[in-house]
Image (cartoon, rainbow, N blue to C red):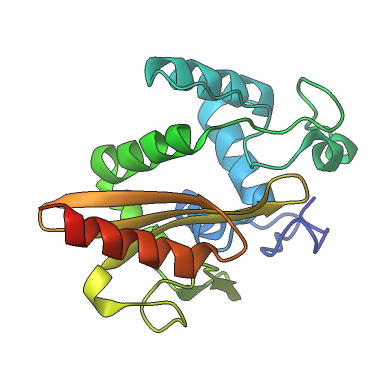
Length: 200
């Protein structure tokens, strides 16, 4: 999978060792699918066991979600690499907007140390440039300084289309926005502006 440019941007080299921080950076900042799967294998011992952990966590958070993939890819992309775990050929992770908002909330509040990864526009890891596709970050086209965005995650697959979970800080609280929209960044900013205006 690491050799497929359509699925990965972080090119691992056979025999070279990488730190968990390096793999975490490539998974979060540059949406590297192979890195996301590798992290799951490291945590659980295997890709299949990690997906089981994901579904157990979904129940603990009272989500309606069903996971078949550690990376977000659909089975049709996973199968050639031996990562087809369950479901139909076209199956992918199923989550509602509410599910994603709850996950975003827990990431930001329960694991605040991860936010520095989500807020990083770009960086070099193991000699490779990682690019964050969240264009609401500082220095990007859709950044609005007053909205105080600090990251979260973009995504895309053929079946899901464009997806965006955005995090915006307000006082001591946080607003998490979930969108499935080709105008994801501009619409996220509109939604956050509306929220700032109508919520104390």
